[in-house]
Image (tube, rainbow, N blue to C red):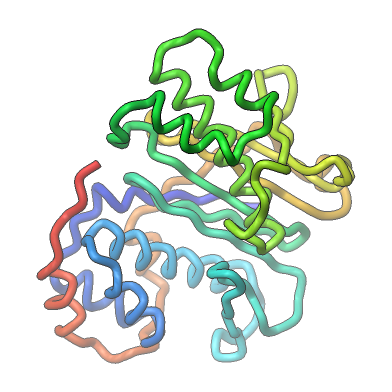
Length: 266
């Protein structure tokens, strides 16, 4: 069970770095990466692909040419070979994160807490449809707007991690998923009434000081296998690129398409 993060906001690739990194992912993924409107989203998507390549390279004892990655509801997964291995990605704000396991299904979600959202009261009113009554009671307790948003984001991350583990993503009915936040003494929990709590384990993390993150693990003995005090390992660009191999041609057009985009400001 591994947890990785990369700060794609700090990474300002040179022309050579970008062209080399793009050549380490397949053409279909290059097109998806360059379809994003902003540079930061392009970087996050590219780093996500490099993270996938890294864990496949390090954790699977198979020839990369024999590995197939497919998507279900937008979620990438190992479709071949049929071996026990799962991973999940998320990116928001400044960070791209990945979790993976040879034993359990996993889902992860990260949210940048300092985004500009306008009127907090109106925002939480709009988003109340995805929360249960008891969750709303927790979120709307008397406290300042910053804390209300933090509590909301923690609930949202848990629901996302749960649904991404199942492969259902945003098609899941979030208002039917109940979350209990961790408090240092009690582990966080998320799920439906029919779920067996012995085969689910959840984690909450604060990353980079301004991102909240939730991780879900699902499978036999998930609670026993999970290390509740485990942390995310931050990787550098060199960590991702040093052992990567070229699977596409080195193409300067990839840099030109990326460089004409603007940055996104939160």
